[in-house]
Image 1: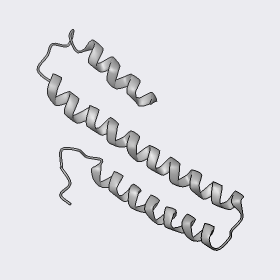
Image 2: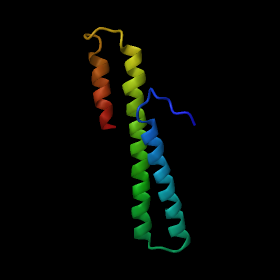
Image 3: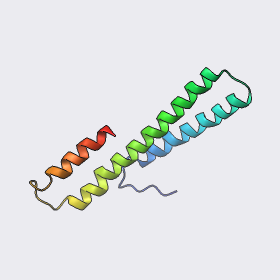
Image 4: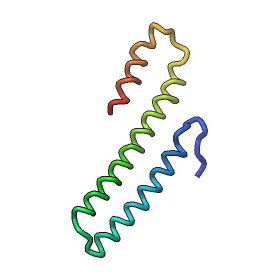
Length: 92
């Protein structure tokens, strides 16, 4: 896989997803060996959070790079809405 250097967080995202994959495999093993549901739910929650954070980082990275490239030539006055959009997406 060739990671686009333009997106500074892609490598970090890939590593996070690989860790989540390892945790998910462990959760499957926990289910198959009859571990307590509370333990399984806790681990599933951790996997879910890791994937959600990876998605959020990916979207934020895309906005910060691709959107910025698309609007870099417009005036500061015109950038107001774009800058506001970039700020508000951090709350997704």
